[in-house]
Image (tube, rainbow, N blue to C red; front, top):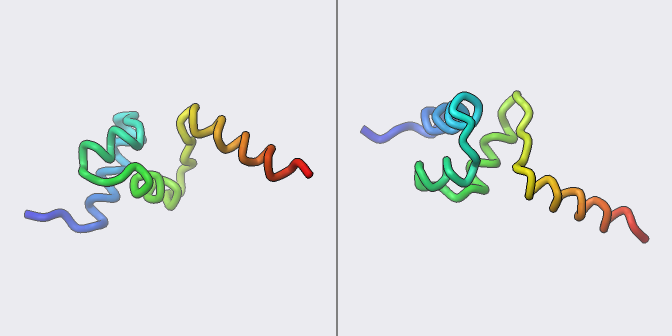
Length: 68
């Protein structure tokens, strides 16, 4: 039986918040690109905290935007 998109979202949220899996691991396990997983996590009401490497990249991007 194929899962509905809502069931897949629930599984993604469970794996991330309960099992503490990283988005890339969830994507590989479920067969989706990590960007899809991150999009689902961002839509969730609970905060999505990107992995440490992603946090560095976002800070660098923000610094580059702020500098003249």
